[in-house]
Length: 107
Image (cartoon, rainbow, N blue to C red; front, side, top):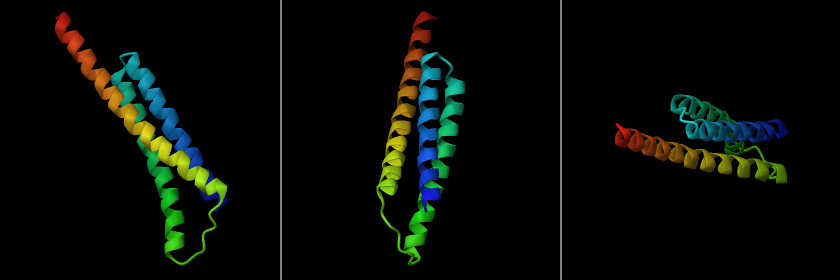
């Protein structure tokens, strides 16, 4: 169980890392690279979600799951990572729209 919990925490950290990397790239005008970073964030999110789902399936199949502080911590990490990734993706889209408007005005 601890292995699954740690996997959720690690993958959630990867989600956040790639999302913030994407934001930095977008702020530098590197929108294609930013999309690739968001794609990597989504892949890490899938992995974290798979680990989370495996814990839920264990409980659904009758296995008693001990709710530890570490498990709660992993869920907090995942929820925060998902929220931040979603918000960052929207910020990148806004940044791209603003950049397009600036370029249109200058042409």
